[in-house]
Image (cartoon, rainbow, N blue to C red; front, side):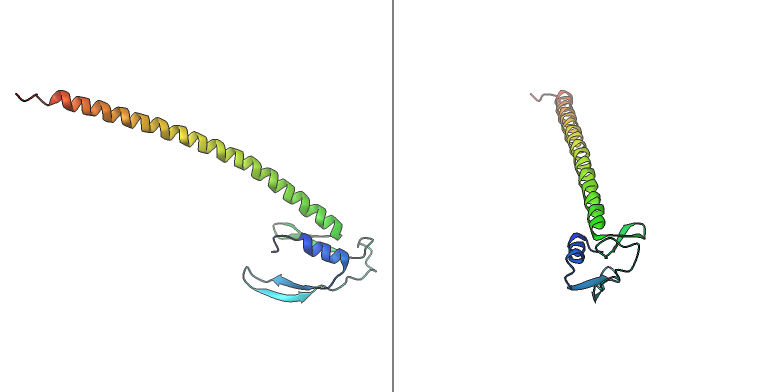
Length: 127
């Protein structure tokens, strides 16, 4: 799927014809041209054109290009907000990991120090 549908929606708004690539699979695209929708359709917007908007899980909704842009803008805003929340959580987890690693390092050094002192105490002094 097109990761940035805004240019395609704007192209419909301005009614400029340009080649499109329609994805058949993740690596196979077919060239196409966008046909002008008939303005006699009663469900179409005042501009006379509609787009199919992928709302997820294989469902598509017919919307005006303006509404399609609004839908995708809202989706991008939601994803941006979720991304910033996830970044905060990951930052907190990284800080927790750093603290745990530091405590573990200190415990290992303390264990090594006490182990070498025990070894020295067990070895008799040679005369």
